[in-house]
Length: 198
Image (cartoon, rainbow, N blue to C red; front, top):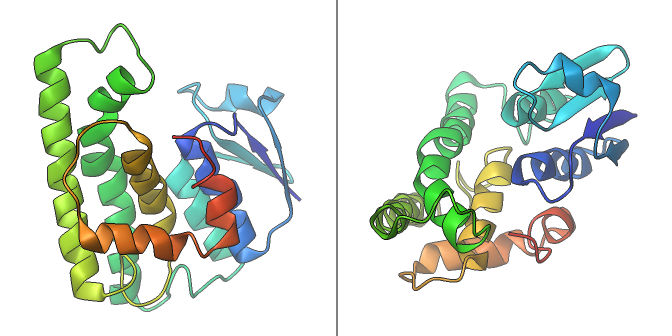
C-alpha cells in the first residue's frame, strides 16, 4: 500500500490519490510523517512505497503510472508519451504561475498578495492560459492530450477546478466547460477534484 503524506486540501496532494484511484492502487493518506524530512523543500506531497520515498507531485504520478504499467494513462509510444508529459509540465510552469497571485489574493486572502495591479495581471494571464487550454480541447475534442483520459488530465483537471471555484468575473470557454463536465463523470475527480475545495 502506498502512503501519501500531505493535507487533502492541497492541489498537489490531490493529484496523487486521484491517480491511485484511476490506476487501482491501494493507498492511505496522512497529513504528515517522518519521511517528510527527506524532502529538502519541505513541501507536500511525499509518498512512501515500501522503502522508497518520493516527492514532487508530477514525478509521483508518473512513477505510479510507470510502476503499475498504466499505459492508457502514460503511453509507452514516445510521441504519445511526450504529448502527455508536455501538458503535465505546462500545468506546473505556465498554468500554475498564471493563477498563483490571483488565487492567493482572492481565495486564500493572503495579505502578501494584495496589489490590485498584480491581481489584475494574474487574472489576465490566467485567462490567457485558459484560452490556450480551450484551443487544445477544441483540437482534441475530448481530453488534454487527445481523445482518451491520460495522466495529463489530473493536474490540468485540478487547475480547471480551481478556475471554476475562484470567484471573479471570467470569460467563458465552451470547450473548457465541456471538459469540466466530462471530468465530472469520473468518480475519482468528484472525490479529489470537484469536491468543494479550490
